Image (cartoon, rainbow, N blue to C red):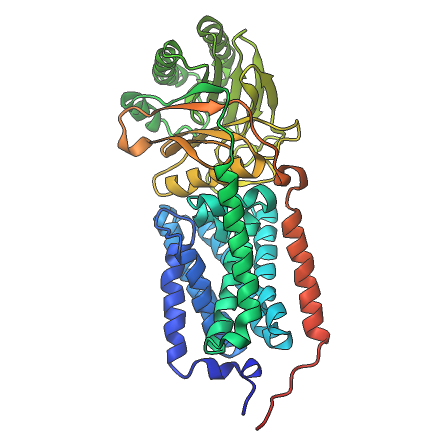
Length: 507
């Protein structure tokens, strides 16, 4: 007889393996983190693709898997209304190519190791490639990580407080070779029991531990009323007509018209913020570029904000788009003004959206300020897709303020990404978004409030937010788990290469 471990062709015959490929391609479109994503698809599509690669030749398996991943990428971009934008399309296709490589590594090496070790090649390689992409690409974690679809699974979500998102990606990726081994061994318990018990025991411990963490979480002793405030429909229309992120050279004769349009938006924000202050809000957050101003008028806007904060006794977090006279034309900043009228910080967006925003990036040093309502910190929109940026070097934060501005098609995935940052770092996140979903979540990922820009005439978000965060392992060690996976990948690959290829058993 033939040893099935060294004869992948036994696992599927002829055209049947293409059914696995088709299933993987179909599920892949719902496995990437977008508005069409389905949580369970993120677990299943890799099982199908691996079933195909292990029963095909190396080049055929990798080529067809890459094609399936490319199809999923196109679906991802189509769902996000960015399919036709060249730089993003090519960038995402390049990332999908890199993220397909773990299937190739698994196909080359799985038969050279013991069953348990063989199942670890794929998840360690997948985590290593996800970590590499997040570290070097301008897209951060917005595209690629398997974990992105799991933000609503609260028990599983607690794992990121230890490992970051890569712990969830590891479990999801490990499910593929475990399931494939079970299918290859025709569900023979005595042949798969070690691997099956190892995987189910770890998954069970993670879910049990997450459930316990949620159950024993102490009720917040103190909360602060936070209001996210966006402009009215009329002000939105005025703003949308200005193309505020790509303004050409402003001539002197254009400035009066721009001032009138900007004043309409700013007056509306201050009016609505006054209403929320009178209702009891102590922290008010505007969205990214919620207020617009010419560079010449920025001091006057900051002076008005200082007067407002003093009069209303609030902390005012303003997202401000500053229009400059010359290139790069725009400054994307956030300013926090305290109840004494003092600007505690001016923070410039550290990660402009590649291909869409061409202004210089800020230094990425996340500001942290101690207040009676906890330690407040601040990033802007796309910054929240970079886990390293969201670990403030200035110390543990209690509430992270995230002014944001999305577009229709990415609102769901972009707001959900912020949930991971909250659990990773043990702080609450207040993300007020124009053209998207505003969300406030506590340090365990529980949603405290959400509003959708596209389904409400006035997007105000009110939440009572805990003023104390919690310490997490991840906030202390960062991406140590990802580095350990990379080291394990190298060790497993080296072991597989030096180990003799098993000789088929004839009988």
